[in-house]
Length: 296
Image (tube, rainbow, N blue to C red; front, side):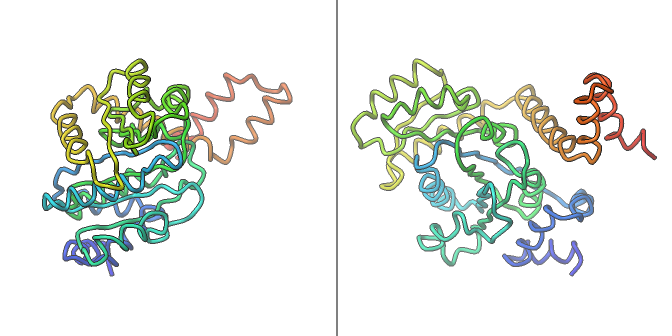
């Protein structure tokens, strides 16, 4: 099938066609796909990032968010970013949701995405995947990142809002601050808020950040309506300056990935190590070599 045929089939409800298009964003045909989609009418898509330390309940939170948005009649896609596995049809998160309320729901699509060595917590193909999902008339894209730390901060370049999920106690608030997560958090969620220490964790967080802080119990679907409202409120407050800042961070992140994988990087680094080049000249050389206009 051609790309146009795949798009038509996916828009008609074919999950298999949608999967093939999403696989294409991780292949050499990515540019061809994006060029084809350039002429396709695309609705606005809301991209929500969910990050936080392992065990905080990100997957459970996403599962109940899917239910909440489906209750509004929205078509929902989930991109679960796996630091090691290739596209796997949703192995990371999909089974948990499919076994629940959405096993036969054609308006819920779940995919696992490999980072493939990309510096940040998101795969290079994630921005293209979001473009594909928008072209396929999905309304909401939820992005789950795995792990915690500086690598997870990249979600803020693509998603708006970025939701950080933490647990009560165990110094999660302080650890999140040290990891830089609170710097990019638009909304902080204290999950498992029925446990001891939840109120203290909220107080600790308020000392570290001025963003909205909500308490939820995702496993019991408690506080999710308030979380959805907080997401909506954040979206209403968006402005061109913030959108430009996200775009700038996204461009810089992908540019860094391209430079890191450039075939001349190791040679230039070796020349610097031997003292044959200074680091400034090597940097300028790498940027020049990466510019197609300078390398016809």
